[in-house]
Length: 336
Image 1 (cartoon, rainbow, N blue to C red):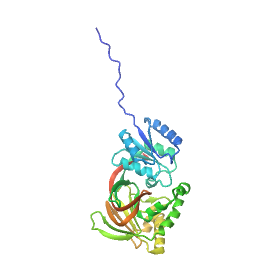
Image 2: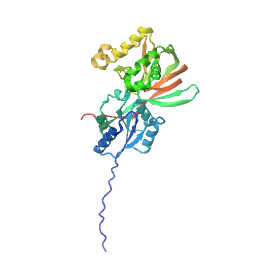
Image 3: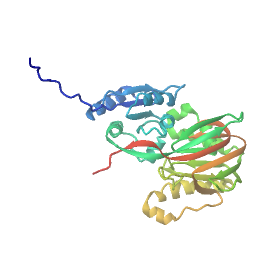
Image 4: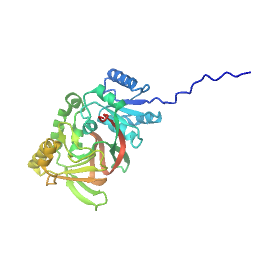
């Protein structure tokens, strides 16, 4: 008796890639987003995307953990800076790429990566066809007045002093309607605050020192909206964060700071010729700059702190460090 030859064919072992879309329902047009994601995923040969919605109770970390557990190949963040920060916090060290669909008023990380801000179809295509770029993450332990501690990340910058008070003083409803113009009133309120920061701090392995300042900025990136280049030497993948200590001497000091940030940094230093004209960045009586891998500080009293433009309450001490290449971001494919 003869046995018929097998007619089965080898199974297709090529796994279909899957993306998870972490979206803030307040920030996106869900119908338009679904249409664009589904079309680009199909064009790229990817499977059906996993859709996960953020909420007041879970701004991104929990749903991103669900995406990681589902072993997705890509996480797409569709929301504002808070969504991007929370998703990045959960993705820290995972190796899963993060794609950005800029939304909201800030788009801080997208600006610093020079991504297109107002092109949803183009951003979605980049998500499925772009290149992967490892960038650094800032990690921070915040100690509270009750001695409790909580750990977070920041992708752009952390700050205490005037900028943190400004964010606390910003009217959220006005911000939604007027965008960055809403910060003008908050800046005025913050500048009226006579309190300064009194802190003891250590940079890397240097000796501990004391300082009295109006603002401390710890930056992984340097650009803000309105053409503000706050930290002109900050690089998102250099394994360092940049520090800025601000202590203007009266109204003239604030004018000097504004001229330096808005004109010298915001205009001149954005071009090669302008950088040559401006010369090497120097400390002065109003601004002091530095770089570090770790920054530890203790304040004389609880102070407001912000991370990537969101208030995080009050801190009595912080311990922050840079983690090189801890986040992978999807960027437009390089031209061949």
